[in-house]
Amino acid sequence: MGWFFDRVAGRSEQQTGIGGAAHVTNVVFDSNGAPFSLDSCGRAYSYSSGLLVSDTATDPTDGAVRVKTYTYVDGQMTAESEWVPQ
Image 1 (cartoon, rainbow, N blue to C red):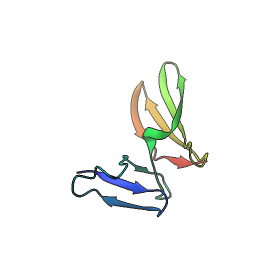
Image 2 (image 1 turned 180 degrees about the vertical axis):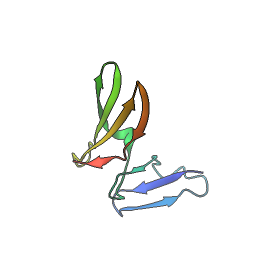
Image 3 (image 1 turned 90 degrees about the horizontal axis):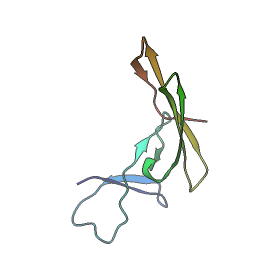
């Protein structure tokens, strides 16, 4: 079973049972601990020299924008940030 997020109640809980009556969506958490559905977000990607340097996610329900950045050394990814609210 997975986790679901109830946007109305503002809480995340583990899915139990069959769950056919509930709309279930995977959520991730931003750097402030706020859950959001990455699968529902519009996405924009930025590249430098062919390498992904940022991933921007815009939540369609509230317009919140979160950015994840990537750091490279000699073409190898060395760091990946959390989703940071803008």
